[in-house]
Length: 205
Image 1 (cartoon, rainbow, N blue to C red):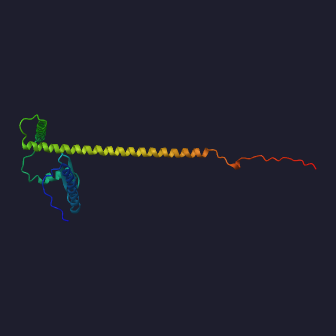
Image 2 (cartoon, helix red, strand yellow; image 1 turned 90 degrees about the vertical axis):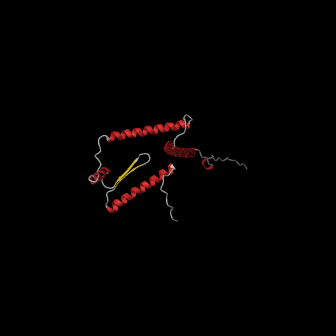
């Protein structure tokens, strides 16, 4: 049966999206390793997940070495000015501003959820709020699943301990019953001796 064509658009379900990300990421890294082995190529792959987690692969050497080689090979092609030392502070400021904006959006969303807001929320802010809620739901479900798995494992461990204790008690009871049976007195008719006496009789004629 032919496999249906996958429509290239964002997966709305966060669980399905995470599963697809894990599968596609593993397949991409596997293909990169195979290409490196078959063609003796030096490959570097960098992946950032939705939550900002970094995944990287360097088939030969280190990722830093691949990046340095890339910079050397493209140095003559680049026409942009060298990056100034103010780049890092500017990046930090932009990140802070983005976090402030996200916090403000979440606070506004909470106010509207609990009836404390005035007017309506714009569509773009609702989409941002929806994305954050999906991430929260995903983390909450993942945490809940981990807690349930730990509780199940703890119950299994407790069951194993109780079974071992029960087996130990049964073995002790068997040993005690065997000891009582061995020390019980046994009487038989062959063990009792009775004295045999005869009476002398005198007969007169």
